[in-house]
Amino acid sequence: MYRQIFRKSLRQWQQFIPVFLLLFVIINLSCITDTKAQTRFSVVELNTENLFDTLHDAGKNDYEFLPQSTHRWTTYRYWEKLNKIGQELIACGQDSTGWALPDIIALCEVENDSVLRDLTKRSVLRKARYEYVMTNSPDERGIDVALLYSPFSFALLNHNSFRIKPIKDMRPTRDILYVSGRIITGDTLHFLVVHAPSRSGGEKFTRKNRLLVAERLCQTIDSIRNSSPSAYIIALGDFNDYSDSPSLGLIYSHDMVNVSANAKGNNGAKGTYRYHGKWGSLDQIIISRNLASKLHHCRVIDDKFLLEPDSKYGGFKPYRFYMGPKYNGGYSDHLPLKLDLKL
Image 1: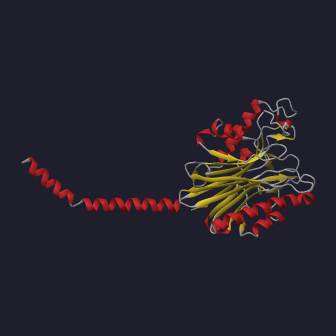
Image 2 (image 1 turned 60 degrees about the vertical axis):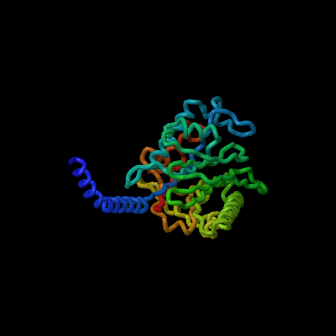
Image 3 (image 1 turned 180 degrees about the horizontal axis):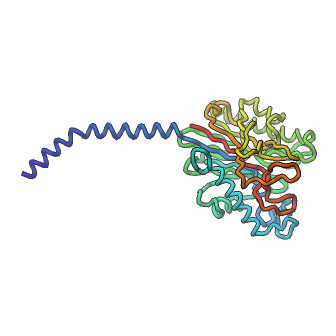
């Protein structure tokens, strides 16, 4: 008798199975559609202001950042600096929609692999589980550029460094770092991280050096497009030039758009850098025109803990770690730039 009741009940439930399967598919498809509609991809750029370790690198002029130097660059200060840069990058994850760590972080003024390993594996940033790639440039001070990426949202495909051959009266400079990877949508993003030569010696006299870097960057952009005409390209870093400078104009002529040109902060910062009381941005994020339609927002991260009063000119300025050789206990002389893409 029980077998008959069980078989009858089973036959009754079987007629509902197609309905349940249909509902299951509809619910999952709606979730997938909603996820695609809400997918964000965030990119941060930061000049860290002399992120050196405490050891001398042979052949490099890094003597300012040794324990016996005028900076008194001790192990304690080194770890304080690492953790403060980590705090600054974590803060870049906050926005009006919630909190999430950046997917990509481009860093300028980092000394070597040891520093990047300590930052990603041993500092307050360690639980984010970032991986990284970086350059090994001929820069006389030994500073390089690096790209941190979250392996949960960016699958590394390729990376390379492009050397800049110096011209007359030009010191060896940082390589351009190229990194490509696939994101959750299946798209491939191409990143070019730049730290162009400084303006030391005068803007006009050194302009040709930054134009040289821009020319090499444009060659790389053209090369990427030769292989993939519809490639999504993001060039970012410290260009040591403002958005209306000739070197930037050259890059724009290669169908690139500066989405950071008018970026501002939520607490009054009108750029990433302040010089003689005036805000400006030497840091830039420049994207290929075909990616501009996916731009959600680009802004300066100027949380109050990253600022300090400007006693000379009034207002506020980036809270530096050092003022010349004087310990200041802040973060960096540059503020971060954050790009949000809606994919």
